[in-house]
Length: 367
Image (cartoon, rainbow, N blue to C red; front, top):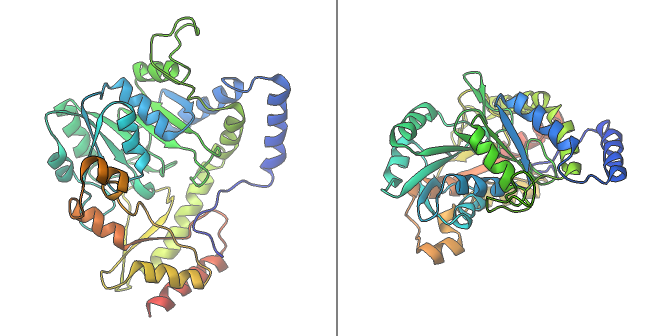
């Protein structure tokens, strides 16, 4: 089976990682030590921000940001074509998630769909770089948020190494969150990262991720938790980050091969990025007459594993339907795209033969 995604851990890195983890175990400094500081320093330098802070997860980092921005009893706009953890983080922070639709035949929201979801209680907005593609309307959305006094957070879970106009994802808005989950472009097994140029945000998260401490744990002035990254995870992250440019380049090369193979197919619409995409996944949009489930099942019989991006959208998840009484048809563009988008295998170690197998299988099944 050719997998949909696969984490890359170079064999040459493994003895070095094990050596560093042995040093951690011998030192008994399992958290908040040298390895985390080194990973954070390298990450902020790579992204180009003043601050980077390692955390226990991307969703927990979002929750801390929502606490900082004071969303309790207020609303946060986020795409419904998204992972449910982002909306859950709003709820954990005491706010209300308000969804917006994406554009027609697009994975990303537009300024128009965002404005349609705004109310007098809106505190801010989360923009998700789905599959590593940065929103082409980012400049207009930033101007809108600045004009209206709304915070703007990047969700870079898919976008390690993505960039636009020479600026990397993670350095484009008020603050950004990254996921280091096992399937991501780079991984620490699980974990997250905050990036920002705002020292007030960084100071808040630095405190909140360790029980709200000030000078020490006798001086807690923030409601926090145990939301920091471990030293062992930071070791893996540091080695992963060292390969990121190489891996993003490789993913771009794989995407170009897919682009050439599918460019003129009448039943496939390619989703092209602006700037550079990390291509966490390679998505194609099926024409309406192609049954997605049928296609995925047939490809599975040919040993090609396909994925999706957020099917169903958050508003159609059972828990959100019960809590907020959402119904099908509320966000028609997102529902349409979720039914038709397919993620083809994309991973750094994919061979030319494996990719050709995927291409032949897709073209053969569609014939």
